[in-house]
Structure formats: structure tokens, C-alpha cells
Length: 124
Length: 124
Image (tube, rainbow over all chains, first blue to last red; front, side, top):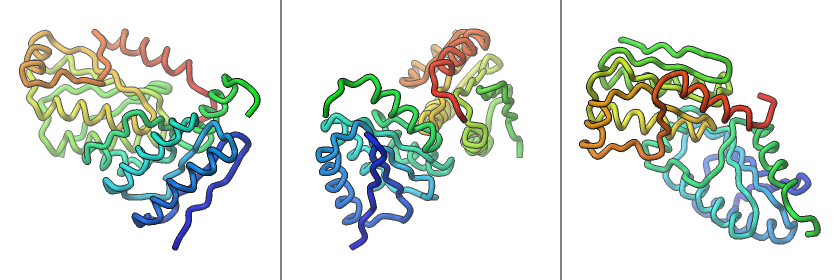
């Protein structure tokens, strides 16, 4: 089964979604991410979907799900690299990703998460 | 087919809607705006509808749609110049534009968007 790699960059976990995901891969990613956040004490999760040219409601709901899980584990999620057509589709599907922070690219997403991390108490 | 021009003013994209829109024109505007936000890294979209003396539910939903798409692309939308009669009609249609920021005129809308832009991380 495919497994989406999770890269650690300091206090931030980076996930780059490069292929259309099957349901099982997406569920595995949620599990993996949750474990990694707890193991590393990460303060932020950056999900780059710039390689996705289309999304469906399943992917949309997964992004909302990951964001919710991360929040419960005290990590902020930022989704970056949303293509114009993908944004339009998500809104048409009624999935405007309420509560999910977005940024244009990885660089800006990192800045948001690093700024948030600086405001945290030390000692994880 | 008519195409509504999108003007760039620094980090803000300005759209002035001057004619009653056909469905196709509105969809084209959504597409164009989404692409321009990504291309320019704009932080704000200002939609001036002061020339519209009447609206229907289609226009109302389009404004909500544009606002949602922009948010996903990390840009804030402000709708300005809503005429009193238009405001009344929108509410009567049940479209109170929840989640869409409004301002009285272009000047005030720009102030809101510029203030929001200053709070952002640098580097686009």
C-alpha cells in the first residue's frame, strides 16, 4: 500500500501530496500524522497540495479531518499550493475548508507556522 | 463573450462590476480571479458593485463563491458599494452574504485590505 511520507522540519511536519489518493492511503496518512505529531511534539503541519490538479469531496473532507485531528493534538495545519481550479471545485462542492488555514505556497505557509511556534511555551 | 477586467493595485485586485452579468460572465470572472490571485500572490480582492441597482440570487451566490475561493487561495474579499435597495433585496433573498466582508466604498475597502496585508508574513 502506498504511504505518503511525512518530513520533519524542526517543529513542523511537511506532507507533500503528489498523487491522487485512495481512501486507504488517506486514512493511513491521518494515522501516521497523528502519531508523528505526538511523537515529535510538532507545533505545525504543512500540507502541500500544489501537485493536485483536481480534488473530490473525499480529499476535501480529509483535509478538514487532518486539520481537526492536528488541532486536538495542539498543532496548527496550513494547506498550501491550492490550484485555482481546485479552489473553485472545493467551493462548488460546498467544502470551503472552514477552520483550515491556507497559504499560497510552502514558503508563506512555513512563515505562518513558524510565527505561531514562536508564541508557544518552550519545553516539549 | 464579455469579460470583466481585473485591475491590480499592489497586493490588491480590484473588480468593478458595471453591468448585469450573465451566468457565463460570472463563471469566467471566478476563473479569472482565481488564476490572478495565484499568479500575483494577491492578499485581497475588492469587488465594487456600486453600479448595480439590482441583484438576483445568482449574483449573491457568485459573491459568496468568489469570497470562498479567495479565502482558499489566502486572499480576503471585501464587497463595497452595496446600494440600499440591493442590500434589502439580498436579505430578502436570504443571502446575507455571511462570511463576506463588506465596506461602504472603495476607499474604506482598501483600508481594510491594506491593514490586513500589513499583518502578513513577507516574501511572495
